Length: 351
Image (tube, rainbow, N blue to C red):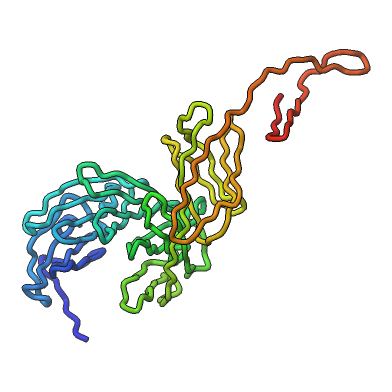
């Protein structure tokens, strides 16, 4: 094994590097070039490559390059950037996009170049998915968390054959089906750390691109893990919830896969997106204040398939009830009595 040291231009430290398919190395987060990205031509000399260009607009923590486009994780600005590097000597910024947690740690592109995925390296941070097919109209499609509410921190995300392979500090290696980037469903995990919740311990990185198909995972405390993954597609469920009287879409409806601890809510357009890793027949409950709760039983969900379930909710009947509560002994009125109203559909307390 030969080891070479490159110290050109006063270089001594960097956060990361990326080598593209054309033989150029992109070094980011270094002690030179404002911590941005500088580009080395390995074709000219892999031992002593010349610097052929630099992007110095902002500190870049991580990056992804394909063809003539560089995608930058500009963590301190809470953004990812899109940069044209067809002219290596003069990179040109094409677009910027804020990430949900304003702490963009890494970026990765799907094989078709249509979707970009980012991590926000913060407590409770999310994996965010974007449609980047039109750089003039980048749109966020969906968000994913491995363990919502736990505060666990994501580190790096990689796209692999419609799956996301993610290193989560205290949750280990997480695999999620991103066939539908607006509805990312976790389908596998291997926890490398005994710890849980918020903290910078545990799984530091993953690499899912070995010819064997195995995943390499590095754990800060426990070392190297070699994992053989099972890439199993999720069972997807989506649909539209509307008002049965007006036909208008209903937002804020809670959709629950009964007894599975899986819930979501419909958006402003009334649409919802959910799913589960394991195939089966599931009861799906729809509830919203002011409407009669509806449960659809035995919805068959199968791996790799999308089921559409549209539901119309019936507005709750409203009525006015007046009267007087009295003491049977003396006939005097009693203040502050709780009234319990019940029928065969719902129950509620009112004062």
